[in-house]
Image (cartoon, rainbow, N blue to C red):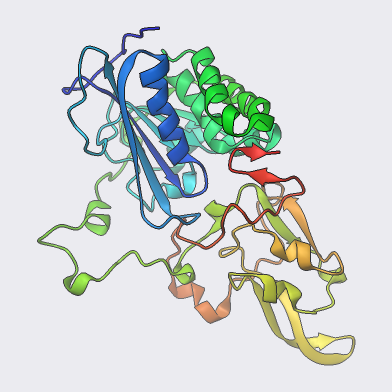
Amino acid sequence: MQNILPIINNNGCYEIRLESIGGLGANLCGKMLGELGALYLSLNASSFSSYGSEKRGSPVKAYIRWCEENRPIRINSPVVTPHILCIFHEGLLGKHPVLEGADENTKIILNTTLSPEEAMEKWPFSAGELHCIDALQIAMKCHSRINMVLLGAIAKVSGFIPLSSIETLCKDTVGQKYPALIQSNLDGVKQGYESVSKGLLIKKQLLQKDTDSKETYFWGFDNAPKGGVNPRFGSSVSNDLSPSREGYIPLFLQEKCINCGLCSTTCPDMVFQFHPGMYKGKPGMVNGGLDYYHCKGCLRCVEVCPTGALVKALEKDYPDKPWFVPNQELLPDAISYEKSAPNSWVTSDSYFDEKRVDGGVV
């Protein structure tokens, strides 16, 4: 099958950029889009990713270029002005320069629970056409992954990628490695294709500064910190790890708590706040609540709690989380939290009732 690209840049390429955090599957999604162009759309294609430490929660970018088969791709630099910009988590907006390069020809796909109108009011979009989709809830419903849902959304928003070609791609890639998961992933792709919102042109008057972050995040010969100082350190003290969660949180039932401390000993991120108090008429350390800024949803505390004082809950059901107590030792009032950062939670730590692997739910 040969497709004529609807628009190309000065290099003759149709370009896609994925902005994500580690663990949501942007790297795999980028590879699949590269294969889609080369093997299923009869295009020349290239794709590569950029990321630091391979940790869940760290920023990830994936770049994809397509051009007509009679025209070679002779550039390998990052995609600066994409025709499709897919943002895997709304927590990246405002803290990372994920919107850089978006212009009037850019179609932006945002994974969020908000409508395009609400998102435009909340976030600093500068130009283009905005499409929104709640990829997390679709992935949870289909037992798929966020990247599969957004793959379907990208196909729909592009206007020229057939859904059938994406489905064939999934069968030939994910299906070969995880045959038991192929139907779940196909459902996720189809739901993403059908559920992404219609495009809403971004009103420039709503959009503010688009370039303020350049001095903060991009360093060159003239303005690099002296001594090789890394201004983006990976300390969880100053970072909000909530973008690492995939829809679930531990819910604290204080009346069932016996203050045994097992939750605190198993928690990798100092989430539980114990303070001197009274329990059964005796002085002791009492569980005062959870610091959800640092909870990445591993749910180890739920597994280890002997009395059921911690249970798995859907995060969407608790926008105002009960027993939310920021860690006072970390002086949160003096910290400007960043919405994503490296953390040590790895995919192999299965915390769901179902067995989960990289391809989804078995």
